[in-house]
Structure formats: structure tokens, C-alpha cells
Length: 335
Ligand code: KDG
Image (cartoon, rainbow, N blue to C red; front, side, top):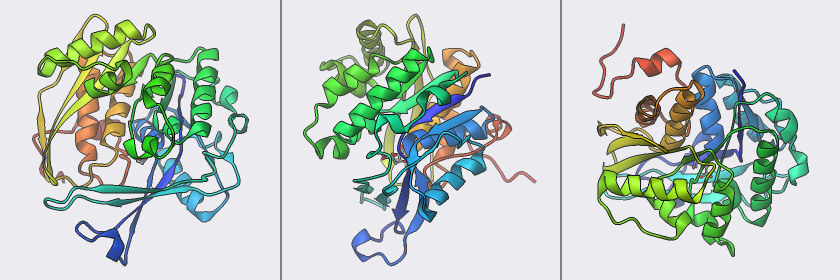
């Protein structure tokens, strides 16, 4: 089995206790994030060989981030060392009727300031079975768009299948003179697997899908397959937020000729919702790498996404047997 290669920026997350506004917080909890790193951690935990490609400075904050990858078993041999800083983000968790809020502090990061030549894509992609990245890199600004283009070109040149997670972050795109539709459409054109729902596809294609529920999702998937001939798999979750502490979640995988939508599971209480999309992506990708059906991809993606809701931090690292033993209806203490 060839390794999966994940490429993107790593961040540290700092968050006050739920209900404490950042502006009056004395104490911040630290977690390691970065959408693609979250996928790498989950895949490595599940036993799939995984390499992380990013750029980080040589300082204790970056070593904290690398430590998280190492403890999950991610291969960190392709991480470039670069001048600058690691990006931060501050997360005020949702609390009762108050929604959560992300404040970025990531300008001038070692990752974003590194030119494409700083990354040894060719070596990282050697023997790889999958390349994974997300729209966050391009959302960082013109330098991020160049990085995303270079990474995708390297994966295409190496003949490695590409998974692209739209991961639309309005705050990042809005901070510069961007055209997310044109940029994301260009980037998704390279992908074999798209993690994105009907709203992401609407953004890409500039059209809305009017049907209801599953019909609308199939219509959107068919339009995406027609617009992007390289696409073979589209995977998404449908989330209904009940409250700050309860979600209902279903997963869906569309292939060109078939699709599978899981039943909804109810998840409550939620410990931490950040990174659930990345956990879902990892579950889908694991089953795709193993050659499983749309049903298995959707089921495993849903299991990991649901489990992530119960884990603090941005990523989840569980073993394959822990994942397989997961029961969405809830479990007792095992002893
Ligand atoms: O999907 C979770 C990520 O959003 C989080 O880890 C931080 O990568 C991050 C970002 O750029 O928002």
C-alpha cells in the first residue's frame, strides 16, 4: 500500500472555556490543527501510512505541532523548515444560544511565505496512492493559490489520484481580492475525489439545485461529474444543528453510477465540533484506498465524524478496532 500524502498549513488553536469571551479570557486551551494535518492524523491512527507535507519554523510551537503528527504515526520526513511563524487561530466555542467564532492570526506564516520550490513534492509523492489537500491553501491569498497549483501539478505529474476538500472558509477568502469560484473551479478540475456538499458544488458551478434532500444532492453530484470529468467520488455530510451540544448527521457518497446515503445519527452532547469534516474525509478515504463501496465509504466517514464530536481538539486518532466497535447509539464503559 502506497502512503497518502497530505499537504497544507498547520495551525495551533487557542480557545477559552465555553462561555468565556476571548476578550476577557485568562486561560486558553491549546490544540493542534490544520485541516489536512487532521486528515493525516486520523488516517495514520487507522494504520494507513501517511506523509505530511508542510513548512514550519524551528521553534517550540512548531515542535508541538510536529509532536502531534508523530504521536499518531504520521511520516514527518517531508516537512520543510522555513523562516517565519506557525499560524494561530482562536476559537470561542459555542455556548448555549451563542454561536462559536474563529479569529485567525496566521498572516506571514512559514507555510504561506514559502515558495513552491521549498516543498519536495516529487520525493513526497514517490509511491503514493493518494494526494489530499483542501481549498484552505488557496484561500490564504495569491501565494496560497500558487502553492495549491504547484502541489496539484506535482501530484498530476506523478500520476497520483487527488482528493480535494473544498473547506470553504469565507473569512479567509473575504480578506483579499479573491475570486473563490474561479480559483476553486480550476483546482477541483484536477481532483478524482471531492469532499463537498451541494452548496459547495453550487459555489463551483454558479447554479443552485432546487430539488429536495437526496434529489437535490444527486442533481448536484451529477452536475459536478459532468463539469469535472476527472471526478469519480463526491462525499459529503448533511448536518442539522440542534443546539450548541446536539447535532444530527448523515453521510453521503456519490459515484458516477451509484450513490449511498446513510441514516441520520443523533450526536449529543458534543464535546468539540471542529475537525469533524476532516475526520469524515479520513474515513471515506480509508475505505476508498481499500477499494470499498460507496456504502462502506459513507458509513466509515460517518462513524469517524460522529466519534470526532466526542473528542476535544481538531483531530481524532483512533485505531481501526476502536472505529469498528463504534456504535452511534452510544456505548457503556468497556471494562
Ligand atoms: O477543519 C478544521 C480546520 O478548520 C482547523 O483545524 C483549522 O485548518 C484550519 C483552518 O484553516 O481553519
